[in-house]
Image (cartoon, rainbow, N blue to C red; front, side, top):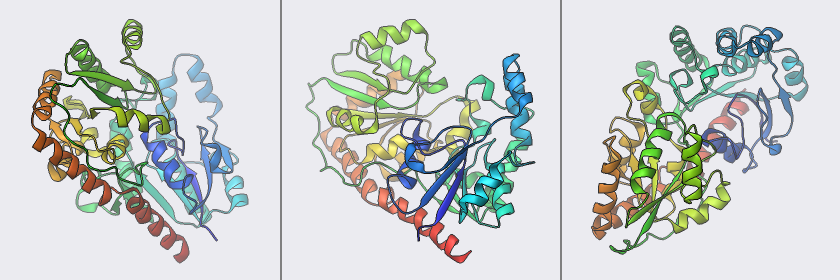
Length: 392
């Protein structure tokens, strides 16, 4: 029998809700190793089986209608896990999970931990991001500065008390210091086969730099500056695929009409766009206030890029997880300066140096077949969870 996993999380298996949800969809829905149910405030993919909607209390609903949404959300964070949401225990007892799984967020993970203890089943936690340190959330969802220390302390307690722990990168595990438990589980890529290593691009060709990712907050600011810089460039053009943005309406209209901003595309459609690209771009913020988040986060799109036989440009600080990845593997061209002109200079230098271009492609192909191979990452996750549920 397949292990029955109840996911209690705000990050749920879905294909159209960001990299974290996409990685869970690949683990739990695209592969048939687990029976899955979901309990969340947010709906999951239809392929997840039974679902339980966690609803907020009446006081929170009133607060949101009266302009106090951020206060209501912060109170929800601080009280999460004190009591189980109404009906959740009955749902879980009826469904009979072998384990409870949570992504370490501020609203659901404490509930998942408490529920697992009430049921007497293992609790599995996946640290994808330090959400309390994120500046990418809508303002109404952002923790107040006075609440952040409590939330970070709770991450450490959840890490200490979970039965199995997964960290999205070495930087996340290092954040826990000497108390770190668990294994590094990189985001699960969508390619199971590696394209042949490509050739260097013709020096005179005009190529597209494709970005598929977040266009909010500091990422949105960086991509917007780069779009302006490359608008009329003779050698490189920028193509952006994103589920949303926080740009001014006139900027969205201008770059949409120019064919630069192309909105959301399902991953299956992006594979063709990656194949046409001259290079692929990933970014991380250079703002000092984002440093902890950049050190502990890891982008799903970077793992997806690896198998595409295209050079990857990592526009990121050298201290970030992506910066460490580029330095350790050689699989990406690291641009460790915040100026968008440095990105252009790196592209032109790589295009005029065929040997370096080929070395980056070969390193990416090696990384895609070895440490970041999707089946290797999924096998690590599957085996650990199956071992845990079998023992319990």
